[in-house]
Length: 104
Image 1: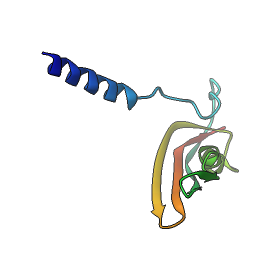
Image 2 (image 1 turned 45 degrees about the horizontal axis):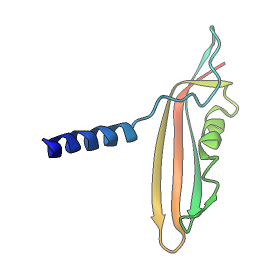
Image 3 (image 1 turned 90 degrees about the vertical axis):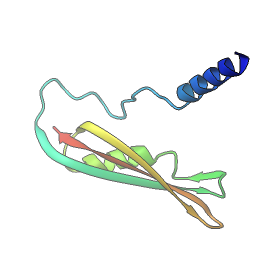
């Protein structure tokens, strides 16, 4: 019985530790808006030697800015995708891609 309770607790903690709430990365769109069309933006940074973030912390903000640059003022139906690559002797490159529909 104790092993079974421990397993249930471990699975529950694992599931809670891997979940998050949705987060708004841009301003709330106005009640009425004009749809411009789909857009995509990206931003990357290097985690040098696994310790020093070079452009890593602002990559989502840069991806969002690139997605709306010169097209409109906001995104709706936004999706965020994260990816990373290991670079031997340097660290890891972390990238964020933001896609959505641009509105004015």
